[in-house]
Length: 378
Image (cartoon, rainbow, N blue to C red; front, side):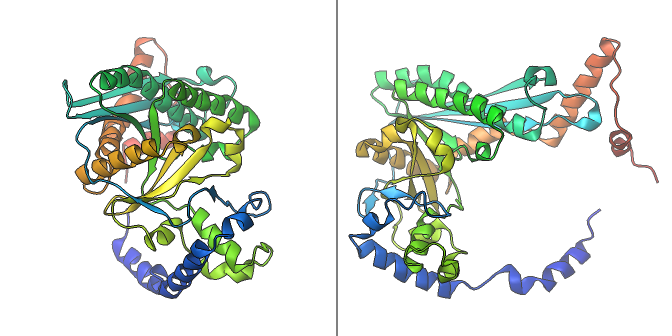
């Protein structure tokens, strides 16, 4: 049981560290940003630093602080969002069985047919399905993302065709990054298998020319901040003390310096190590988008990043979705609601496993810890 009075005392003791005043850091960062944005030679100085810098440095083509204003509404389009949730295998339950639930939502505006389609699809796995790996949280997360892609891909084929027949744009919108960060530090066998599957799905979306984007709310990326770091250390990345004043900042702070509501930044190319394993046409590009209440990060594959009209269409749909969702894309929020697995659902899942075991005259070996949690004794 949580002792709330003790928590209050703990928070009061660290209150001076809980909310720091970074206004001086912000002002310095603003001045540096305005300086490098006005320097037409800065992009040439940055090129080639991707392999030298100990932090991620993006590249871009347009003016660094260029912005594109976008409409606040779009009357006719269809959007598909997919999200996943899971029940991890519980070693205290004596089985390696786990569940992945994929939720999806289709929202159509200005089109004939159903305006809203909600669905969820559970899939159950056992350890024998993963003979190459130990059943771990990392494995379950990798498989969940694989299922999000494949499920969305299967749905998008029919949905896109119907939208094209009604001359309406169609967007497949993900919650999160198209950069598979969780694989970057993984073992090569895990990386090889799942990255190839992810990229195969992205390739099929490319073949069907399906508009695809990932939306990240409250992103913590620092690629724009890293441009400030390069300037402050005069491109000598060994001088870490020279840029420590801006180390606490994130990209959205920089984007707030110049982005206006319902506008987007220029498009940047990511040089994350994991992206080096992508084919060129699928390499992740990104831009920052002011949806009115926050600045989010939008990630797109390279083949879309080459078409400004498609970029603006994606940005406009996300803005419209965010307005309808009171600050967050409503399609993503609803897909999460379809996917989420709550505490009672977990208990139901484990009870079903036990029931099936009894029917098959098989007895699960539960840990004493699990048994104790089901009935607390004094």
